[in-house]
Every structure is written in structure tokens, then in C-alpha cells.
View 1 (cartoon, rainbow, N blue to C red):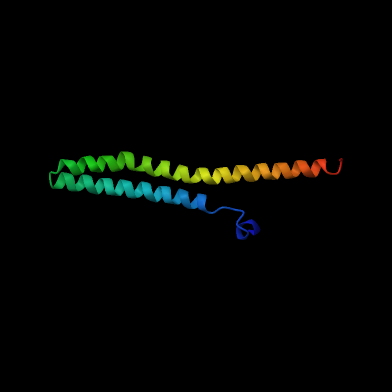
View 2: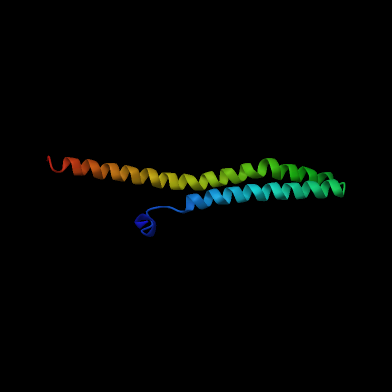
Length: 96
């Protein structure tokens, strides 16, 4: 909990995952609405838009979320490198 209040633990990666699932649900809902209107009003263009949203929408949301998460993975990796370098310095300092 101490790391959370000191902003050493990131909350945003979890929020990004929630955003991803909300984005997928939104894409599926919008796609089904477009298809429904297309079928009901005999408008083929809306059916294709609906299929586009259902198939490619979640893919675009996934790529966007992955790009955002990459920044946090870079931060985690740099933090791990920092901690390992600090441990090496502490191990070398008493013997030097």
C-alpha cells in the first residue's frame, strides 16, 4: 500500500485493460446496431459498416491499448534495471 501512495505502483495498466474490454463491448454493440439497421431498412452499406466494427474494431482497440501498455512495461523494466544496479553497488561497496 505504501508503494501505491508513493506512486511506485502503477494503476493505469489495470485501467487500460478495463478500457480494452469496454472498447470491445462498444465495438460489438455498435456493429450489431449497424447490422440491425442495415437489415431492417435494407441498407447494405450499414451491414458492411457493422461487420467492419465487429471484426476490425476490437483489433484497433487492442493495438491502441498495447501501445499504451508498452510505456508502462518500459518503466517496469527500467525500474528493475535500476534496482539490480543498486544491489550490485551495495554488494561491491563493502568489499572495495
